[in-house]
Image (cartoon, rainbow, N blue to C red; front, side, top):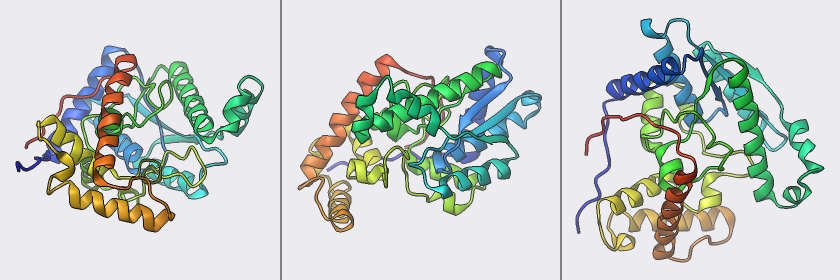
Length: 293
C-alpha cells in the first residue's frame, strides 16, 4: 500500500512567506495593522508571533498588532493568563474584555441557544467575532484569523460567522503539526506549543473530546484522501494511530465515540466534505506557502 506523504517546511522560508502575505493584505487595504483574539493556545500564539515578526520588518514600520483576550465564565483562569503571557512576550498592546454580559444580552432574543451547550458555544464564538471585528473597524485594522489547515480546511471545525469571520487566515496553510513546529521556531514556550486544543466554548471542552480523534490523525487521513489512497481505514499509517485514539478516548471518558477505525475515518471524511461546503459561504484568504512532500 502506498505511503501517505506528509508535508515538510523550511520554517524561516514559510515565516517569511506568511509575513509577506500579511503585509500585502494590510498595505492593500490601507489598514493600520491587525487585531487578533488571543486564547493562550498554540494557534493564536503562533499567528500573533508571525504577524509581530512581519511588522518588525522595515516595510512593516508603523503597523500594529493588538491582542484581545475575550473570556467568558466557561474559560479557565489560566487561559487568560497564558494569553496575556504571550502578548507580553511579543510586546503587544493587549486588553482583556470579558464577554459574559454581552453574551447574556442575547438571552432576551435567543433564549433557545442557552438551553443547548452546542448552540450557546456557537453564540459565544459569534459574539467574540463581533467584538473583534468592531475593534478592528474602529482602529482601521484587519482581523487576523487563527484557524489552522486541519481545523478550517480539513474538517471545518469552526463557527460560521464566528471564529471563521476574519479578514485573512495567516496559518491556513499549516497543519496543527506544522503550527507547533513553527511555534517552536518562533520561540514560544513549550507549554504553549503543547497545550491541549480547546475552543473554550463548553464546560471541560477539548477538541479531542468533541471529535474523538486528534489533528495528527486528521492530517494523515485528509492527506491520504487528497493523494488518492484507497481503503484509508486499513492503511498501516492510519489504522494503528486510529486504534490508539479510540482506546485513549474510552479510557479517558469511559465511553466510546467510535467503535471501529472505519467509522472514525468515515467521520473525518464526512467533516472534510462539509468543510468544503462551509468554504463556499465564507472563505478568508490564506497565504501560498512552500511545502515539500
